[in-house]
Amino acid sequence: MIKSLNHVFLARREISKSIICGFVLVTALLSIPMAAEKADTTKLRVVAYNVACGQWATPEQIAEVLKPLKADVILLSEVPKANRGKKVKDWSRRLADALDLDHVEVGTVSSANHKAPQWGDVTGNYGGKFKSVLSRTPLTKGKDYLPEGSGWGRASAFRVETEINGRKFALYSLHLPGFAHHKRQPTQVASWEGSKQRGLADRINKEDASFDVIVGGDFNEWTDGLVMRSLLKTTKMKNATQEKSIDHILYSTKKEMKLLQTGRDWGPKNQNKENKKAEGCLSDHPWVWGEFEVSN
Image (cartoon, rainbow, N blue to C red; front, side, top):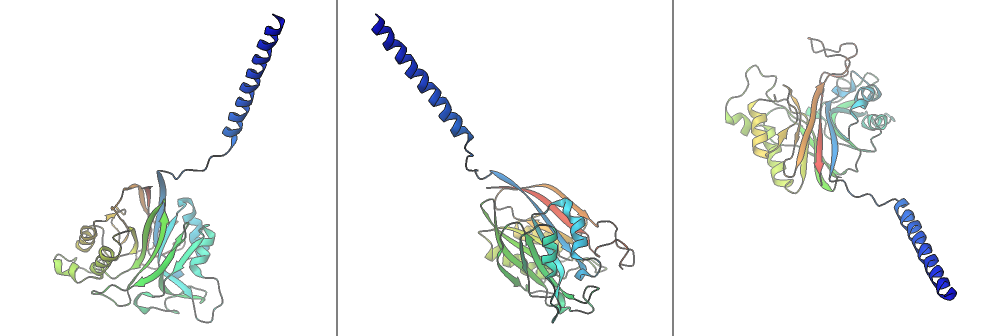
């Protein structure tokens, strides 16, 4: 009888030890950080900004105003580069560093071939009207494209590639001529057919079929104008910029990408009626921005 009780006691002790060991093992496993799974969706904030050759503000001044947006991608137009012989830090890189954006690509084409000193910053160190892309994610294959069409020459769209939430994106920063400043807005399809925006649409449809696409910059076309409406229809893209503007952010609808928020802002102060620098104004253009939800 005593022997049997000893067996029972020993068996129960072994069971208790097993339970305790099992509990310890489960607790230990739960304490080990699990590998992060790729999010089903991620938020993406994009800004497009014509910085007026840096004539009205330094990169650091612009960064102070843009910081609250916490942008993931910034598409710059009329951005200056270091003038020949000037050993200074790249203008776009200065802005990226001030905004904690690690990746920068700068185009090689200055709009209408404009150069310093007329088109340059107040220090004389920088000049020109180039395009650049600033990003949190790595950028590759930067290249300028010069679409054919009416208007001033040397108009370009600077294209780079990146990956966001497992999806391949083509990002364009551009500065193109348009009809926004004409007294009469176009009403005939021929105006669209002969425009550089049409050339851009052909490029996107032909070369970017496997990419999601975001195009931002100074289109010189009004939001509700014939050319802009035709561009959207031809590329099947949408315009994140909903206010009347000549600066826009267009985005792909090939895969689900939801527009969450959008805006347009001048910063501390708007330009004056004479289209000249006003104290506290950063550029003769506002920036436009959009926040997207990108599924994987």
